[in-house]
Amino acid sequence: MYAIIDCDNCYVSCERVFQPYLKGKPVIVLSNNDGCVVARSNEAKALGIKMGVPLFQIMPLVKQKGVEIRSSNYSLYADMSNRVMSILRDEVGEAQMEQYSIDEAFLKAPEQPEGAEPFFTREWGLALVQKIGQWTGMPVSIGIAPTRTLAKAATWFAKHYAGYQKVCLIDNEEKRQAAHRLLDIGDV
Image (cartoon, rainbow, N blue to C red):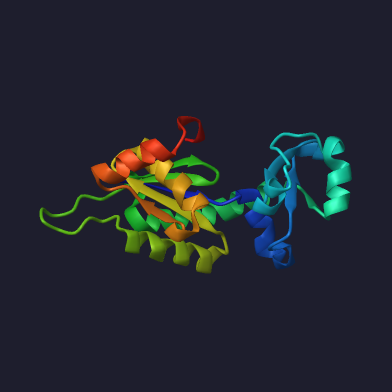
């Protein structure tokens, strides 16, 4: 089994850790030289702000809706990423983890004795979401499945459906088929 842990709206979430008053507000983070949007909070996405749009094109909307603007702070984002990745390494060991990007990592379940409960369970995922949130302030979503691609799909469900509580487990054929029916491959 594989698990992918994905920091939700990573750059915005990093900013919110140190500026808690930003929680619940529309926030965008800009590229180098503050030219284009490189990260958006869910609130900013709901306003229709697209990834990569030049700031000058959305300035009227930003002013009208009170969107908070932040310049990118890559040192902060790298530091927060390292904190999350350290927790993940402690969970499964260095050999079982592959950092996929600044805000995502795949974990491979450690070998379990025959007949033992699976290592990656929904309860494990829920505990890890809580631990990362408590230790770093970063919200994460977790997808668990037999393949990396299915785990990535599971993460999409974990992010977009509150009922999953940030953890989606695809561990049988029925769930796999449901995921294929409900998710456009372009979203993965």
